[in-house]
Length: 233
Image (cartoon, rainbow, N blue to C red; front, top):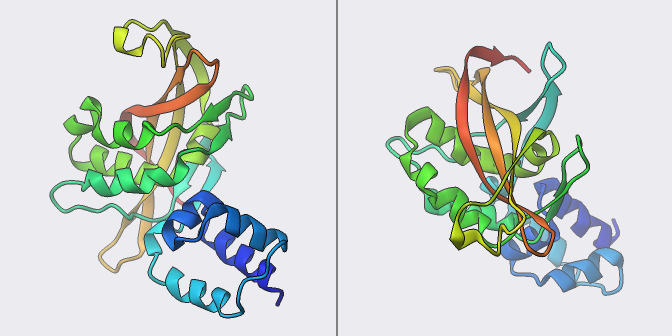
């Protein structure tokens, strides 16, 4: 197999962007771009080395899909629980995980709005006042929802605008805030370790509209389990 093609396939198999892959492997983004485009040829051992390294990066792989419920509403299905925490979530690990998205750009399908991921998202998502108050099932839900940021943005709906009221956001949210509805599902495992069903959650995506005109994901709030609702996939 062509070396450039094998490296690209290895990266894509993890679900990571070049930026995220770069952070986990130590290979500069520009080098990855050159390798994948065939502008430079890496040593023949590189694909084997990367394949070996990826065996120990289980938490970097995303198993996420989008389905529709009986009413035709979209749900992001997250198939892995990677942040477990018997007593509490290690939010430092969630913050580290979220850094892979910084610099990425995603789109909301409903209104074609472009959403940027800024450097403040990891710390805000993992360390906001709202997050620190979360416990139990909802804390676990928010932590693991970090795996599905792109898809949760994609299916976001029902935009609501509100003016900025805090002086500390006079610049970074000069043009106000937007909230969107989103939904996701997480697996429930039986005693045998197999998935029995998925619990469904809803949340509100908070978007800040900066003075530059760009819209940035700021946090995901108001996460609640949909009582009595679960799904099979």
